[in-house]
Image (cartoon, rainbow, N blue to C red; front, side, top):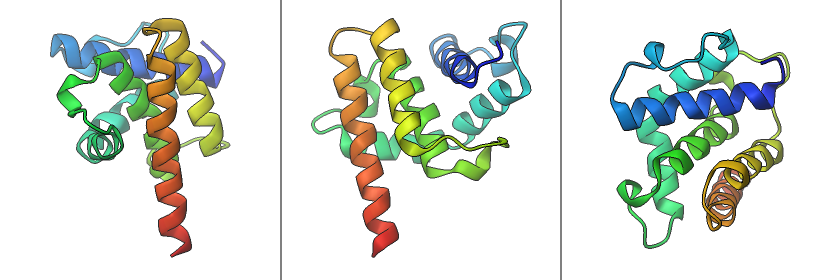
Amino acid sequence: MSRRSDQRRAAAFALYQHDVTSRELDDVFPREATTFTRALAYASADYSEDLDGIIERHAKGWTIDRIAPLEKAIMRVALLEMIHPDAVPADTPIPAEGAIDEAVETAKEFCGADAPGFVNGILAAALREQRASADA
């Protein structure tokens, strides 16, 4: 599990399993989980209230409880790196557009047919909001 995209995916899966089973994060990581994967999942969990607020604000007509757990986990991981890039030590932080692309690709591979567009729409809206507030 050397590629960062694989590590991000593993973090999202760990968050998903944590949410669905209520098991501790330590108990749901794959054996080969890297330090980056673990740090990303823990930081995403630590910031989950903030991240879920962003997701819900941009998910028009959807409450956070109605969003599929895997989609929510994928978006939390991407948003964490977009909004809180210093929360996880990384040699080279991923650009926001890269985080969105990886999240959409993960949703394409593992979620329903509507998930990639849903994930893309929420993350793109969050990025626009972030950039608008930075320019203000």
